[in-house]
Length: 145
Image 1 (tube, helix red, strand yellow):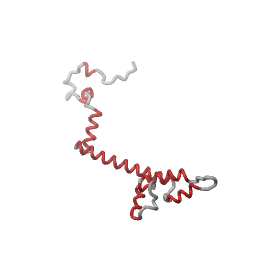
Image 2: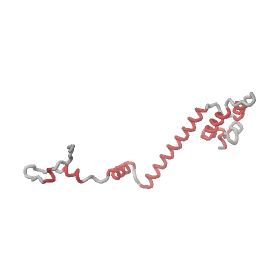
Image 3: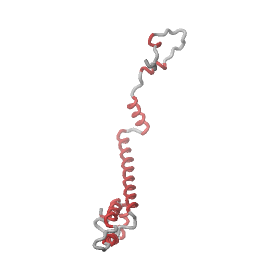
Image 4: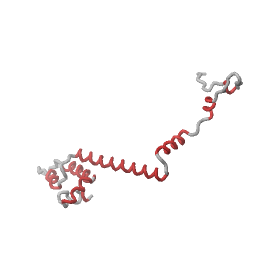
């Protein structure tokens, strides 16, 4: 907040600390808000707003560019936190990405159904095997009865 322009104008800070303003997302949000509120502000025919904006030395970016910078900083912070949290949770569990994916698939799909194993079982020699009532029933009844 100190280098965003709220407490100290960016032009009044020391020369060797002015670079910090460019990596402060607060500066861009504050700058967009100040331009939105004071640009073209007139009191009794005197353009007070534009004069005040030149005094606080907010920079030459427009409101749209300032908002894009704020969204960019937010996106970078979100992506960085996602990567760090994903790394920490995998490290804590001791899992790799591949084993985590396989474990999730096993939990979601569950064990294979026994009904489907019967389809795969075929007798080795069809003439020697006897058909039971269960094997003669159709597996799927698609009739509209």
